[in-house]
Image: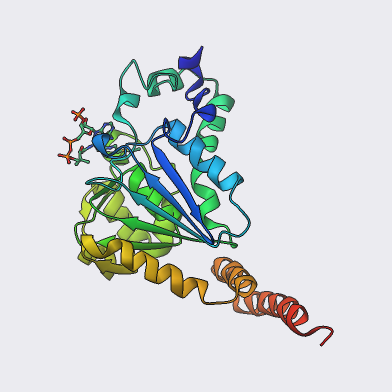
Length: 269
Ligand code: ACO
C-alpha cells in the first residue's frame, strides 16, 4: 500500500513530476526547483530525483548549481505531509509513524541521499538562493558547498516550530558554518535570517541583487572552472577532512595528495 511506504513509489517519477528541471551544459549541471505555484515545496519524489541526478551525474560535470523558479527558492517540505491524506503516492507523516523502526529510518536515509552527494570532492555545488528558503529549502542550500544569495533571501529553519528536527543533512553544515551557538539561535527560534546576516555569519559567500543572481553564479562557476580539475578535487578532499584531523594528520594528508599530483604531472617527464 503506497500510503504505508512513505514515498515508496516516488523513485520512479519523472523530473517534472518531482518538481525539478535538470540541464547539463558541458562541465556545469543546473538543477532548478520548478514548482513555483507551490513555492517549490519538496516531496519524497523531489529527493529521489535529486539522488538519481547524483547517481547519474556525467563524469565531465564539475559544477552543480541548484536554483529555484518563481518567488522562492523553496518553501520546504510539502505541507500535505502533515495532513492525513498526505502527498498522493508518497504517504504522510501519519503513515510514516506506522512504519517499523527499520523501514522508517531507511526512508529518511533515502531522502538524505538526495542531499549528501552534493559534497562529493569531484564537484563544487552552488546554491543560488533567493526569497524564502525554509526548512528543507534551507537544508538544500546548506547541502551545497557555496551559497550565493539575493538580497531578498529569507532563510528559516522551521522544523522545530513544527515539532520536528532538521533531518535532511542540514545540521552539520550549519554548525560548521556558523558555530553551535548561532545554529542553536537560528534553529530553536525558527527565526528568519536575511541576506545581511547570512553574509556576516558565513552562511552566504556573496549577496547580490535578485536580478544579478544568475550572473554572479556564472562568474563563480567560471572562476572555479579556471583551476585544474584533479587538483581541485584533491584540494576539496583535503579541506573537507581538515576539521576532523590534527595539524600533523592534515600535513600527512597533504603529503599523500601532493605525491599523487606531482606523480601525475611529472612522472615520466
Ligand atoms: N507545501 C505545499 N504548498 C505550499 C508550501 C509548502 N511548504 N508553501 C507554500 N505552498 C503553496 C500555498 O499553499 C499556496 O498554494 P495555493 O496557491 O494553491 O493556495 C502557494 O504555495 C503560494 O503560497 P503563499 O503562502 O500564498 O505564498 P507567499 O509568497 O505569500 O508565501 C511562504 C510564501 C512564506 C513560503 C509561505 O507559503 C509559507 O510559509 N509556506 C510554508 C512554509 C513551511 O512551513 N514549510 C515547511 C518547513 S519544515 C520542512 O521543510 C521540513
